[in-house]
Image (tube, rainbow, N blue to C red; front, side):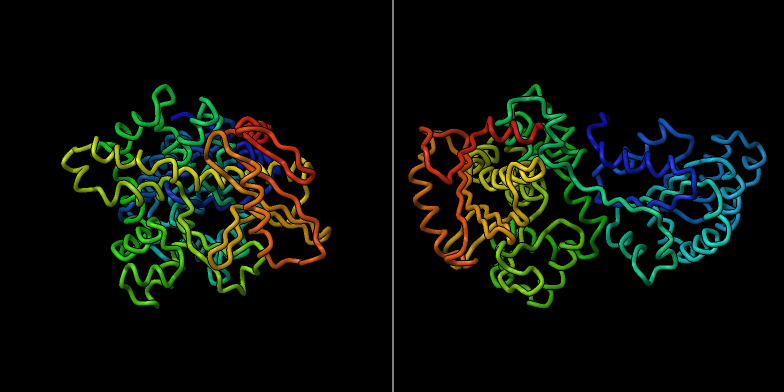
Length: 458
């Protein structure tokens, strides 16, 4: 599999390895996000070994680790005398850590599931031996909930880590390293396949979106047709309730009351499961940009991963049709609503462009997000509390957009935004695939696809 981007993550790890003191690094993130590939990339350039845990007995795990270490370190004695317990394992790697060595325990939660005392054993060895060695110990895991518990204050290894990396899906800016096509096609591909590296790399850039959807997603023997189900079953205990909730959100039910009415589930169940899905970063809660996230009751829930959103919107409801291999029926239904679907992702693309402009000091805003109130909604609003400057932005996934008409509508909606009324500097921005014509307005900026691409590729 090709390795793309991850420059920031690799630099952070390289800096830690170069410290030449004991390092205890936690790497975690959802399945398919590229954690193991990052470790593999680091090990190409540094002395060390990745030990992959599996769902098997402790005895088999220790035997496998013994065999891997004996081969890597050319230790014939270890090959004949396997580790009998975790004390023996940690004693051995401590003895081998007089010089810099990386030991990465991948899928560490599997080891914890088999023997919960392993974290206490590790705490003992780290405090009394390993922290004074040259080891770079990496614990890696796909179970976000489990890994975050390991970071929590109730965990025996709390406070021992020297670094932690939460690996998240690619942004469009990062995915462009692989999606070598027109920017418009890249936005379409990213809207469907999202930023999970394993999914992005499934996309055949030599073929169009229709071909990729049929061959890579719809065909029932394809990797992507069933992977969402696999990921959820690995992470969640009662998938059927989660499926109902995520499906409801994918249909556009973003408020708790709407999800309850649509699914028929109890309010307590919906609230609990939304909280878990939020912790797993499959769903995110948003409030209007002018609201306090901790206090606001205006929160809505949206699916944070593009492919999960697409899968629950178009694949899950059509499972029977897909099983019968009526792919043309499904693909026609997808393309009937695809522009509208991509339009929502386009808002995130425009927000990303604004954030890039923020980083390069072209603009200066402290908060950038959506805004809504009752039936009024603005795609993006940017705020600067110090200067009392506010920017209202509309995003249109359309060609030949009438900027004048959009601007007038935007100014009307802006009147409903309750933020430093009468004492603020208002600016406006319109994003579109293309415009009918450029218009000159003092506090207006217009961005077409070329402008957005330019900002994201800097």
